[in-house]
Image (cartoon, helix red, strand yellow):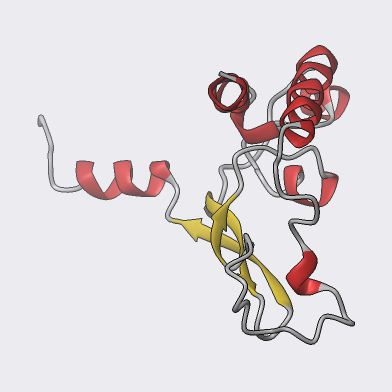
Length: 141
């Protein structure tokens, strides 16, 4: 039930890009509750520098794989979305230009053998460009 609650809260908060202080506190509480119920005592064990067992032959839980971010409160990530204006005073003075790209998948690719975690940010074509091209050649004149 906690996982579902987190997924719903993250969706309502636009992955953290459009969230209130109260939403952030509530989401953090859910995350803390989930962390307490995690049966894996050291989920990042395979990434420790002194870990010589890179092959994970013990079938221990491993973070290896591609992960998709569902929520963040990290400013270096939340500042990426041009559709979210974090400065309401500036927004009232200057209109925002249309975004040149739309934020897509944000995630991490974890490789326990290499002991690396790579941040991944995927960009997509913004909706306004798609709309312009889909309307080209359609004239009611």
